Amino acid sequence: MKILLIIAGFLFSFLVNASEFEEAFDMSANGFSREANRIIVFADSAPNRDVVLQQNEFDFISKSLASKEAAYTNNPIYWFTRGLHAKNMASFYQQNNQPEKVADKIKKKNKFYLKAMSVDKKHSPDLSARAYAAMKSGLPDESKQQAIAAELGLGGSGESESYYWLLHWSNINELKKLGRMDDAKTALANMKKELAESDQKETFKSLVKKIDKDIKPKEKPAAETKTDRKKEPKAFTEESSDDEYYEYLIMLFIAMLILLIVAGLIEYKRRHK
Image 1 (cartoon, rainbow, N blue to C red):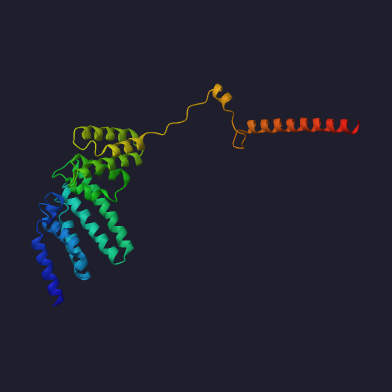
Image 2 (cartoon, helix red, strand yellow):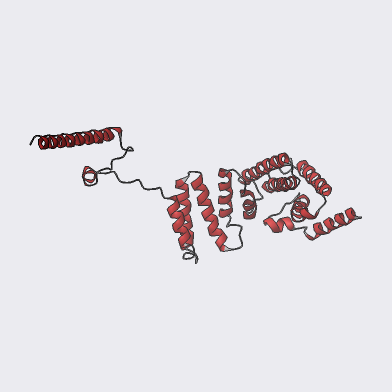
């Protein structure tokens, strides 16, 4: 009886959330919407479901999506859906303490997401900003930056305008981490230009200053001139060059020797008076 109630609850939630995928990602999974919607329903209801039922659900979705690969191999939304499913499976195995399977599903998730991004460059239907926002976390650095840039180019996936400007910051930060400083500067210039044309310029003024400071190379101290060195003699430390170090030792030895000679002469004269 318990299992029947669980199944009935699942069927009801599926009917209620029949368009959940489209609402969540602002794009349609034509041809595999049944699987896509069930993936979203699973993500929302998994903690309250029986483990055996979850595994059966995984098997059904996996087999169903795999059987449609040939027909949708050039569909970026299809590959995104595969990645989303792999992410759900990784979460399931994490909850059931199966680390090896978690690692395998995360690897597949990234593989499918990267495939979706690659296919999206050449084929339709296009991925949405929300899809890129969902994919960017956990990807390798270079791919993560590409996902952020794509989301940014689509206007961002956040409901607030603040999210959009923070997305600019995230993109610049990723470029900096990759050592692409020229690209980071260009991205900052674009951010400044867009801000100047918006009513948020003053709100994010301090953020722009911080980003500007972060991507500027640290200035090297100016080379000292001979005049500067005369005005500010170097301190006597062992960190100085070996030649300078030994020069100081010789000078100190000579000074001490002169003092000893002078002291000796004074003592000699005092005794022979």
